[in-house]
Length: 66
View 1 (cartoon, rainbow, N blue to C red):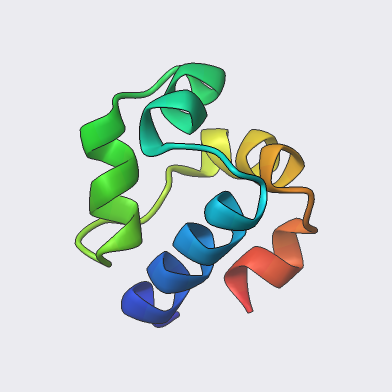
View 2 (view 1 turned 30 degrees about the vertical axis):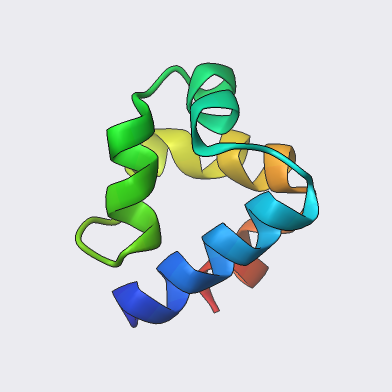
């Protein structure tokens, strides 16, 4: 898995849904710093959050990780 590529995809999909990092973070129960780390490729979302993240971004989990 390419963390930077996945991070850029998360950022693009979040922006497409017109969500700020803070809004997405609140919906997922994480901090906006966590969202930032995902989007810059410094960290991957935990498995426990992947399903909820994909639902918020209106994508399939496989699409998120592909």
